Each structure stands twice: as structure tokens, then as C-alpha cells.
Length: 233
Image (tube, rainbow, N blue to C red; front, side, top):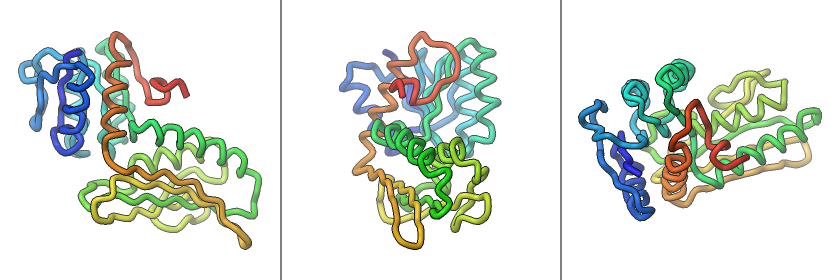
């Protein structure tokens, strides 16, 4: 495939390397706003940039009828608008708060545990995420996805908040530490014990590989998708 990379930081460079190892041609490496000219006619765009520019980047690509894999978090208040643009332009959009295979399995496990715990009133719930000090948004998109998975099964919660859980708001502790690629934990605590599930990323390679796999999967598809569609979860 011909792949254009929009956003060329640490993640973009790892995606570049993995895409080429899998036999793809990287036809653009952009730090600026994508256009029909500088995208260089790709089959798909992989977008990992910054929250403040992600919407404009994705919109420009979709309006040029190019499918987009987007891993930028912190801009999702405009996701519905982007999904509408994808449909209007008869192309495809796939958003992932995290492209790691392990994290997406963790999402499924989190929902299963939330369903088991929904009527066990003795336990309170709390989330924690740890990331490197360069991360722009807090909480992480992955933590928000975990929280939303809990909301689906536990009607006690209908919103998240930073720090302690309070009433119907599920608390998320967002910690920024050194060069940590990403650690996410869900805790259920009672007066007598604690249940914890946890995912720890050792490096960014799993995220990058998942993004390339998603790009391979989305070719010739139309509509809006998530990583669980790619993995059949």
C-alpha cells in the first residue's frame, strides 16, 4: 500500500519503520497540514499528531476521499462531525485511542469485569493511567475508553473526572512520569480486599504495529470503524 503519515513525531517514525518492513511504501511524512498535493496520492493516511490540529488534519484527508487511521487523542468532542464527513465523502475513518493488541484485549476484559461487578455494592471503582511527561492530554484517550467500557455495564457511573471517584463520576488518576509509554489499571476496592486488572506497555512498537494493521484492514472499506472491528472483538 501507499501510506501517508500525518504527524511525524516518535510514533510516526516507528510507524514508518514498521510499514516499510511490512512491504508498504511511505509516500508522505508530514508535520504540516495535509493537502491533495503534499499527501502524494496515498491509499490510506495514518494520523498521529497533536490534539489541537488533529481535526483539521483528518478533515482534509477525508475531503480528499482518503481513508484515515487516527490515533491522536484529546479532540474527540468533534468525532461525530468527523464521522459524518467520512460518510459524506464515501470513504473510511477509524479512530483508536490505543492500537495495541494487548490493550484492545484489555478493553474486552474490562467490560467483562465491569459486568460482573455491576451489582456488587461493596466495591468502589477507580482508574489510574501513567504516561511519559510529554503527553499533552489527561486523562489518556485509552483511560477514557476504559471508563466508557465501564459505563456500558455499570449504570452507577455516567461520567469520568480527574482524581477521586465521586457520586456518579468515575475517577481517573492521571500520572506523568519519565518516559513511561503507557500503563493503565482498573481497581475495585472494598473494606477487605482489592481486585485489579492492569496493562503495561513496554514500548511504542505495539501501538505502531496495530496502526499499520488497521491501515491494511481498512483498504476498500467505507464507513466508521474502531480497532475492535479490525480484531473481531
